Image (cartoon, rainbow, N blue to C red; front, side):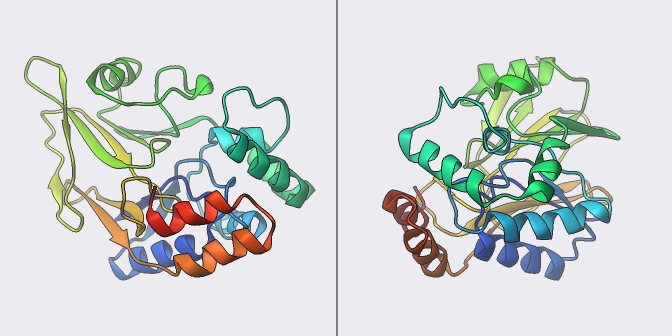
Length: 247
């Protein structure tokens, strides 16, 4: 069954809805959410309602660092802009939303795949995968053949060479990539709700286990509407501009 993988939605309802609709048109029969469901954007409750509904239908969902931060505690590693959004989001969440976020696991294993927000290496510390050394440590921390993550906000893949060392590959949107069974793969699916690679279009990935392929997609959506909601909510204006510019 084709599976759509979404990460870093960050309370962006317009982007979430656009990605889900696009994935369904591409034949997705199930969904996986790779963390950071909330934070930054203006629609945390609406986004969680959709995701929780899909979780009830069997969609795996893992916790991200912004999800954990919205449950309380100090925020030592976040920018002031991110902190402002976390404090605002905390005030929006009710008992139902908080219970859903609190119950999310840090990782979910499924057949030959591992779903995790940041890295299979110490997922509770939220390390960023920024190069081949980080990718190698993440792959070494699990026996899964395919590791699927978010957190970085840019689509990228790492694959193992015959010597075992990973190499990076930047996917072309809409072009299926064969996931050779003779390699191991670490897939960064990109951000649905706050892309940071200069392209404001929402990003998600579609895994087709039967065909053995993975395809990244970019989905235009009404970023202006999402940005206006951020400003109207009194959230930092910079968060609105990031959606428009994809940065």
